[in-house]
Each structure stands twice: as C-alpha cells, then as structure tokens.
Image 1 (tube, rainbow, N blue to C red):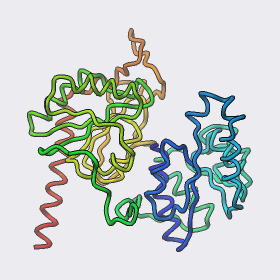
Image 2 (tube, rainbow, N blue to C red; image 1 turned 30 degrees about the horizontal axis):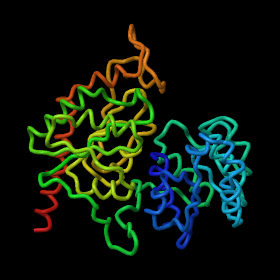
Image 3 (cartoon, helix red, strand yellow; image 1 turned 90 degrees about the vertical axis):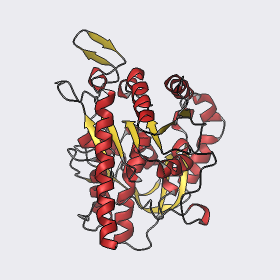
Length: 353
C-alpha cells in the first residue's frame, strides 16, 4: 500500500509536464482504490497476488489469470513503467505490451527484475522512495524532474463527481479523535500492546477519543485487545480505504507504525508521528507536511530490515528498538506536531485578517 501512495507524486509530475497524459495502473485488488484517487489514472487493472498464492491450482485453471492477462495486454502502451522493480512487478511488466522501462541492475529493488525491461535507468537508491520514482518517471518520459515538494494530488480527489472526500458511513465521535494505526505486515514493525494502551489512556486524559482501523482478522483481534476497558476507544468496522481516508481527514491526528495507512495519513497532511525501528525512515518514511518520523536511537542494529528481532539476549517478534519508545515520549512528540500546526494556522489567520 505504501508503495502505491509514494508513487502518486511521480504521476503528478508527469501530468504537469505532459498535459493530458493518462495512466493505467496494474495493482493488487486489496489496494485498487488508491490509484483512483489520482486524476491522471484512467483505469486500474486488478491483480490478486495475495489471494492467488493461496490457491495456485484455482488461479491457473479457474480463468482469473487468463482474464488478468487479457486485460493487461488489451492495449499497447507508449511506456510500461515498473516503479516497484521487484520480481512480481517485473513479471507484470514483462506480460504487458509496450516499451518496458525500469531501473537498471544497480538500482532495482530485487536483482533480476531488470531483465524484464527494454530501457533501464540509473536511479539513486539512497533517497526516499518518492524521489526514486519521481526520478524514474522523469527519465522515462523525458522531462526535468521538478524541485518542488511532492504533490500527491489528493486535495483534488473527486469521488463519484463529489467535491470532497465522501462522508464516513459510520458515526464519528463527538469529541476530537485520533486514529491509532497499530498493525503492520511484519510483527517486529509493531509497537507493543502495553505501550499502545498507555497511549490510549493519555489520549483520553487530554480530551481525545481513539479509533482503531484494521484490515486482516488478526489485526481486528489485536485492536479489540487494545480497546478493551476503554470507553473512548473504538474498533472500526472493516471499511474501504477511501472511507478510512475520509475518517483520517476528519481526525485531529494519527499515531502510526511503519505501514500503508501511515503513508495515506501523511499524504493527506494529517498531523501525525510514525514509529520506525527495523526500517529506515530516510528511505521509506511516510511523507507529508505534518508528518514526523520517530526513529529508534541507541541501537547499533537499526535499521536491520529483519522480520524478527535478535537483540542481545532477546529473540522474538517484538522489536526491542521500537519497544524503547515510551508512550509519554510519543505523546509529547505528537503534541509538538499539533502545536506547530496550530501556530502556522494562527499566522495564516493573522495574514488573512
């Protein structure tokens, strides 16, 4: 999910440089809403990598794969760009019709992906993923990459002809509320439950309700554990990503671990902090005007990019670097974001007055 969000500014650059340009986007069905948020995307071609790998027999003989291939190859494109540059995405690129473009051998995420491309480009790896993709698109499409801040084009999102994000289908809290994004694809990118529960209590002490989103069933079960005993904390029902985005825009802020929803919140300029331990915020950090990264300090092994933690005598799923963040410390850093935003809004109000 995060990769999709971080690719949006590259589309905005291309749209500004080449008026009228349109993109079709091959994307996993679980995240197919995200490309529709950008005005340059004409069509989404849905894959189902996560679901397909659970039943390969059905995939090959049930017709889904042949339907996907037929849709993917229905048009010969001017350019087929693989920004993700891993083996899975390179296969999709190889199947598509058109000039296949992507990073060169030294720049790809997974070595071997470059074999799918007819044209390759050198893209610096020691920079934020957003900048990598902005570089790639500018080189492929032949324009000078803008030096402006990334523009996700989400403020111009017009779902179903409406002029704003759709109103949530659920009743929102009467008090100001925060969204706590507790789940991640790796166990050791998650903050420990005790710290989350302490933060939920601190939120209540400061006049905020808390909403807990989830995707998979185990994430819902964890959210129930976090909310248990707190009248001001609510586990959301399973909702479409567009509705979660709308809920984020109505919120007073978010606290997240390194996961896809953190990138959505950041791109929407929601006041937020994101916790990083095993991963490197300098390379994959959630970007936004009101987004702050909290990176674990004092651990020589960070970022390790490992799915389990082996620190000193500990071996298990809880990243000790993330565990070192105290709830009160996270809250203090979040309030700094709030105070900075409030000050900026007051300055703007004075100027307008």
